[in-house]
Length: 363
Image (cartoon, rainbow, N blue to C red; front, side, top):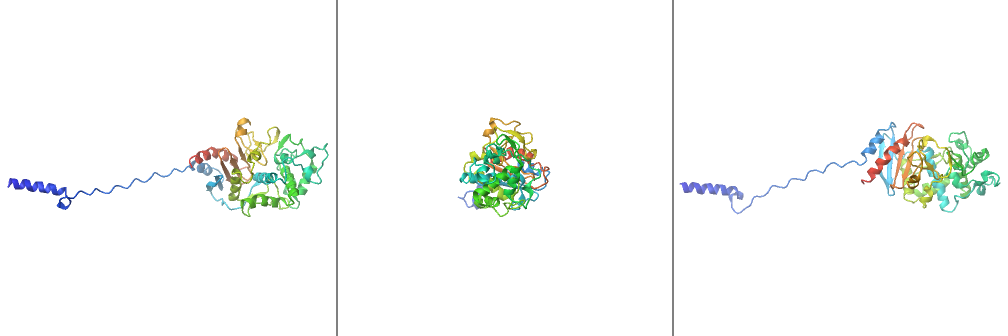
């Protein structure tokens, strides 16, 4: 009996290790556990969004992109990308690009003078107005120094761009052409009329042909204020966030303007600065000017580092704020439409610029 008990015990133990006690099988291992879920993706734009959300402005659209297109779009409140808004002085970059395209195709040159194109313009060498050039008009150094809020023909829908240019001409110049910078509307209104006479088209038609049609923009991007006969070249543009971003992308990619180095060149290195309005973002900073846009450099006094750090911007009174950072290869656009001077768009741009560069490095 003792031997039988030992045999039965050994048999039972053996059966525990054999499948079904049938002998010869092996134990099937349990299936592997599923891998743990990946950690949640980090939002590389979280700091940028937080800065936009902290703005006192209720409705904002931020768009950031590179030469390939928009890589980030963020809406606070309600700001549709395809809705038309007034650009105010953000129109200046559009005018600068429009007329520079005429320079690149040979219709005009930066050395062209109103005296050579406009029939009633004096060619008398003793009259300093005869020496004004297109470059000086586009860089606001022509000597026509009316400020942006001075009463003038730029709000008159019943006149024409040519008649408005004549009104500025008749009022005379305040400084020798090329000597001083003054932010104001006369320069681009005269330059716009030069373009009209050189092409045989209205300024609204020139903009349509040179920018809107080339980039396939919508019908909401126009120069029509106060009228299509007398569009304010320095502030009468209207556009959408989507369309304006296409303009910025094309400029960054060198598609709208071929010689981007010439286009972005500082045109005010050797002038005296008269009026630079703080509302444009220049307050407390020695920004220079190109051809319808600021050469932005966020230090108190312009120096050699600013020459190599190419950031252009064209802020508008209602909060529209586009810029292109050529060194970091991106464009940005803060779009809003609020009461003049209360939006803080310039400060918001400065705040988010380094945050955008950090985010783009993680793409």
